[in-house]
Amino acid sequence: MNKLNIIGVLVLLLGTLSACNDFLDRDSLVGLSEGGFWKSEQDAIMGVNAVYEVNREFTNSIVIYGMMDDFTDISYQSFATGLTTGAFPANAAFYSASWGMFYKGIYRANTVLKNVPGIAMNEAVKNRIIGEAHFLRGYYYFKLWDYFGGVPIYDKPMNVDEAYKPRATNGEVYAFIVNDMTEAYALLEGSYSGSDAGRATKWAALAMRGKAHLWAKEYEKAAADFRELMEKSDRVLLDDYHTLFRVAGNNNSEVIFDVQYVAEKGYGIATDRNYGNAMGATSGSQRTRPTPELVNAYEMADGTPFDFSNFTNADGDPFNPDNPADWNDEASVRALFANRDPRLQQAIVVPWSTFVGRGGAEYLYRFPVVTTDPTSYVPVWTNGSYAWRKFVETGSVYTLQDNMPQNFPLIRLADVILMYAEAQNEALGAPDQSVYDAVNAVRNRAGMPDLPTGLSKGQMQERIRHERMVELCGEGQRYSDIRRWGIAKDVVDGVWMTEFTGVQIRQRGFPDHYYLWPIPQSEKDVNPNLDQNPGWE
Image (cartoon, rainbow, N blue to C red):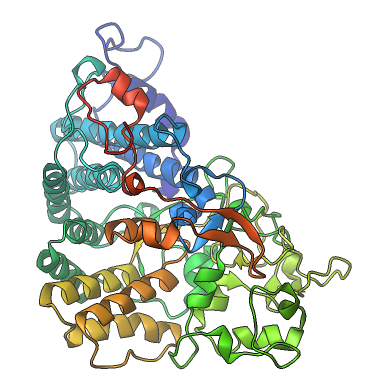
């Protein structure tokens, strides 16, 4: 889709698709209008491209929060608090902005579904566009369902004075998503190339249908969808984990659905600013940072748990991570990160590791931080901070700080494989060989050994949850995972965000009612039929 970069035309187009009264519905005398549009195949293509644009808008709005992982136990927000501390009020703009984006995407998808069937055009292209609209509408409803619970369902482009439906039930929204994904699966192709790279495929629809089943605890249905994708699609795990999260990995063999970006002001992604560090080509701010809890969760290379008690400080005493002095000895600190799960240093910059930054120069993260040596890596936060390597363009030739041409994966095969393992384990009540094979495939790609055999359902469940945490960190999956598993309050509430030296930053908060976001007060003011979620009244 030329990375969906037909924005200049789309802005004109979309301004005309939201008309909501007789006066505004008149054909424009000076530019594009809905009355003069939807006549050709090119109109249909531009129209569906506009539906994708909402996905880019939402992703850009949450990349500053580590794609929502900052509101979990595995990363934290350096500046903003809000959801991190449990202090966001129901009228916070964050909620209303997200709600508005998703419904904007739904409106645009509905407009496509209303108008494209009547256009005289190539039938294969028409079917693809209709399939894309079903997929994207279902995807946006999934996001609403995940964050807000039951929401009003609109299946056609409604005028403002018609949009007063009450909230549908969780079951009704789930069924609507499944139906949209089923329609999309039947209409979409398995892959696209050239300028169409990045469009939703039948495999993206199947993955999202399986994900909806998993969220609804329909485990057999979820496992069946994920299994079909694993067996029949052309998607395969990429050999190099780190390449998945660099520009060089765009459109790789593992991605199933992503947000596409270009190196153009306003249409790139701000990962280098928010995930990046001061030594990168664009001088990132480390707005989102990995937590010690995440780093400590990475296993030893032989698959055994990491434990500080197995390591000593410079005096030969047990290493105490909460004693800043213990971090002052290079040999002791290096030992902590040697022989660990390779994904640790592929995803995170740790003390005494190197980072290739501006102009391809290699910097060493000395700790305590050394600011006088030009070869030293100097993080933004110097008291003991881990930094993301994931989504930071090593040695980048790109200089637009907020506009990296790095595609952001929303669904990739490793995620699907682990969701299959979870669903199958739950459906059977105990892991069969296919569950082991699935988890081991993700571990083996990373260079980690197989899981031990003989695990119970509960033990395998914990292993899968661990694997999702370390494999998908920084990709925004953790926030939804801990909420759907019902463990968010346990792992987040009252926990201090700390530097790796034990220095406290701020205390997290996750009240009981944070499992769902509030229906935005601005929406309730307009639509009195909207009931509020519990705890947000």
